[in-house]
Image 1 (cartoon, rainbow, N blue to C red):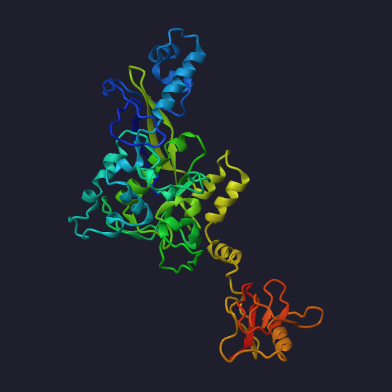
Image 2 (tube, rainbow, N blue to C red):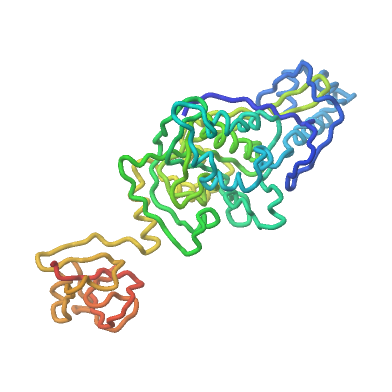
Length: 447
């Protein structure tokens, strides 16, 4: 990912009409939006950062309307108040595109014309991104802090934008991620998907409101050499600057950079295109974006936000490790989702093993072999008799418990001769309609 930076100026005095921002304060300002002699203040909203740029403490106090230049506390409080006002959401993320909540929801699930309908490679046509997605650039430069997507849906659907929720909260781990499996001609002419990640496995249940699969389901991707995947994301600590502008960062990453500029499209099967890391597949790597805090101040003392973005200089999982406010448990959970390059196979096996769905390594002797522990019994005509079970089990690496085969009638053990998954004890089950819910490994004739 190119480590370029894009600037977004967000004015604290912007007047907003006819927009819905859940939990936001809609502000009205009758003053002119024309800003004269704006100065840029890099870094956090602190008195020292501002006074250095505006020309000293007296100048800053005057801009803030504080008559006593020695009243540092009053100056700090007023400055903090103006910075907080500048960070209040001014527009619902849904309203940034002007296409309604269903379009945005479908897009971040992996659908809409932006993911599915491509212009001719020669250019032009209805689905040319410079035409079909023209609103993206104007929205990314609109000068407003984007609020939690809702679009009026909360009146009818609880957490309609499920992609941004983990349980009752918005992305509890503080990571939003997007993953792509295909590409289209971008507005900049780029046509190829970067391959920076491997998809490992996924619990589909976490994203059931995106994939619409209600039953408990899992995917083991077993990706091959030609299965290109690109993932990127960002992380933030609760109540931080990054948290307050997270939907601006999301828009800039997902809409402007990944779609408009790079042409990345289509979700990993069963996963949303974008969402909290909790809902996304286990992958081995993801690029990382971070917001850079900054402010502007005009000659009337109005404070606005000057947001820029840049590459983290490391992958997303490594960057998360640097966040001091994250607990060891949170960091462990993110590592379980972004497992590191070359760790996909081991992570997939571990995940499936947690679901009791990993077949044991099949072992074959000359006469006998083990079969998948997902089977209820040996394939047709390869059953090992009760009399031969001891010899067959030992031949494929099983062991006797107290010097003998464990025999019984069980529902949870495969029919016939088998090995217990953890101990390797040889069992013989006479129940012909057993379901093998404990995933014993059948021992069968090697036919």
